[in-house]
Length: 361
Ligand code: HEM
Ligand SMILES: *[C@@H]1O[C@H](CO)[C@@H](O)[C@H](O)[C@H]1NC(C)=O
Image 1 (cartoon, rainbow, N blue to C red):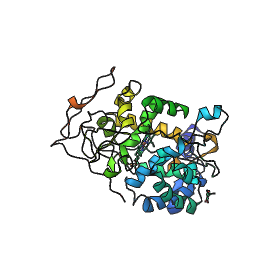
Image 2: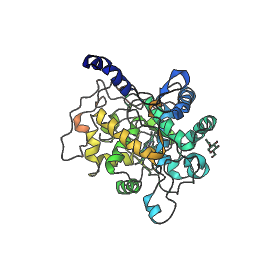
Image 3: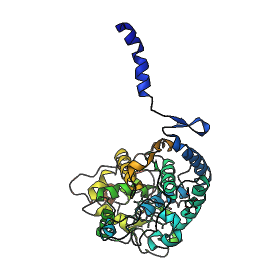
Image 4: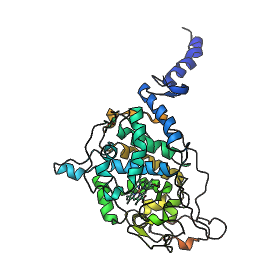
């Protein structure tokens, strides 16, 4: 063959090499790398429409994201070392054995989302463990600024109830929380990254009178405001009934600060990682994605699962610049990382306002 004709067919070989192997076509012409992932497009359509109110970053999304943690964190290396059942991790046990697990005090309120999700998992014949992690990944993709999370499918539908006392509570000390997370194989930095989830979060059960009060001023955006606002001096008691167990003073009317978030933001072990996210959306999203990939398969074997990540929608970017809420100045920041300067942030214009609750749907 002449050199000239070789050169002529070279682009053809390159094009073939660049095409992923075994692309499968699923419903509505959508494609995925693995035919076994097709079912997840049908689950996607169903939950976006009928669980997440047409693709919002609202209450069900927040609760679904929380559920990924409360299922997965039922995992203990220590119990295993003691020869006991250490929990199955991200195994769906919280849905299989919801009568047992949602009665754990730290799982207060998760029964609502477990009951809302279960019929979808049964209808589509996917395992409860897979469904919980899928719903979290799809849900957070509705929040502008979120990373596109990894989603691996194939968790068994057979498991045992989690042992009690493995889910951290907001009134726990930093040392207790870090020890619990370490027992579940997470470093302090990984916990700080996972807490980006509290950027799209509100509470209903810490202080029930102020139902829906968010942890930052932008609960519909996966942004860095949570890391900024938890470092502001707390001078507000948001509820009419005073501070509750696990709650500390917040910087804004309508916003609730968990004791654990306030303490982790200020603790020497976690303060610098916390500060590193304050004005770095891409660092926050990247570290959150990595930690979520690990959390989603706690207790599972990665090699036994199928990668269906290409079913997860690509989230919209977050257009908001990190800022101080209106009425705040840099003097209100309780700088806790001693070895790095705090980035300069400007305040939103106008007088100090209050934060609206996340509406129930
Ligand atoms: C130190 C560990 C943690 C503690 C003490 C903690 C505690 C809490 C508490 C008390 C609430 C309010 C629940 C309610 O009253 O309705 C909450 C909400 C939430 N948590 Fe955490 N959390 C922790 C870690 C995590 C992690 C790792 C995730 C990651 C997925 C997560 C995701 C969420 C979300 C998304 C919500 C909002 C739920 C909603 O708006 O309905 N949390 N958390
Ligand atoms: C998973 O187990 C539940 C019972 O806990 C059952 O209702 C559901 O149909 C099972 N799903 C699959 C895919 O086997």
